[in-house]
Length: 396
Ligand SMILES: Cc1cc2nc3c(=O)[nH]c(=O)nc-3n(C[C@H](O)[C@H](O)[C@H](O)COP(=O)(O)OP(=O)(O)OC[C@H]3O[C@@H](n4cnc5c(N)ncnc54)[C@H](O)[C@@H]3O)c2cc1C
Image 1 (cartoon, rainbow, N blue to C red):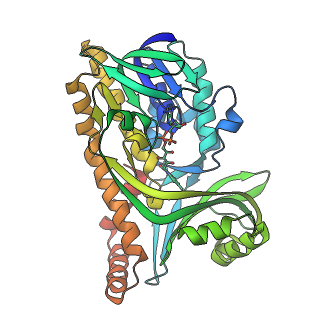
Image 2 (cartoon, protein in one colour; image 1 turned 30 degrees about the vertical axis):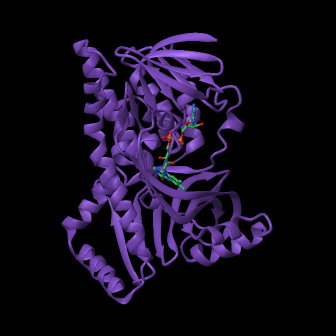
Image 3 (cartoon, rainbow, N blue to C red; image 1 turned 90 degrees about the vertical axis):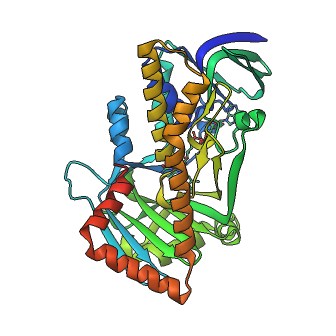
């Protein structure tokens, strides 16, 4: 068994783990990323995710400060306006950004983000990536933490657990978690359509769940968008089943989107995701911090999950920088608790907001329909509330 040493051991090399490595590598820490999948030797197979991520303006500013946006911007489609249509209460809202130098958000392919990050990380001398790693146990003492997997033992000052919503680190360390299972699945379809999207994102609220249409970059001169539709597992499984040919998916999509984007001309990809949300009781354990989906996951209704993870990365990078400048020890209880105190409330708040949004928009009882209609009218007439919502969506 190989024995390896580093300052930061990042477990999980997807969007959160890779970005954490990139941001913290600038502080000259020696970093090891252990990832289960073969993201370097077999990237096409390992990164099969066809999803897009809506990156908020605030997240873009952080990525810019890290010198990353210059690589991402060529693949990012701006969201200039958002139209919200509540079908249960027959109300509409229109959001735009008054500032010409920024956008409400940007749509980028997840696989592109991972490709950019791995390409940049491969050039860094203080980072090693171990593929096919699956940690089976963890031991810590007052100054170090050790992880054991089949082929290696890694000794570090601290673990950064970025291993997703079913975090193995969390299970091994027995950190408690509050989990909520929605009886919903998300259907994610990337498709070409007849008319340009004009950089408008649509959010429709139906009794069965929300449906978002997000503007993607043109592909081979085709107008392209992504649809994310939360619905009952039965409906999603029926639509996505191979028995139902793409022709029928096209018909169902046309019914929903034709008046906005023209007819669907081609269905590129169809994926489904069971929906759940969770929040860890705390975002740290012995010499370990949880980050991104390993700490929290939320309903995708507002497209904010990774943006929240990115704020964790921003906080962790800033604490690590302070420790480096002051030459203080990292991974201590004080260190981990400082991180927890910076990130926990933000995640808890968003967990609650997205949960309640999903709940209220599915309701069609008369009094709730009336409350929603009233709410939409108030927002439509009140510029201050509207700009607060815009700032929330932009993450600023
Ligand atoms: C339908 C849908 C749409 C979404 N849209 C948006 C959006 O528009 N905007 C947004 O901000 N967020 C969005 N999200 C949320 C976003 O996708 C997640 O927050 C983000 O992908 C989490 O990334 P992560 O790296 O933290 O976790 P993951 O992507 O789960 O990565 C965890 C990594 O850890 C690895 N791993 C697991 N176990 C081990 C182990 N034992 N050892 C080593 N490695 C391990 C896995 O292989 C994986 O690579 C959406 C989510 C869904 C479901």
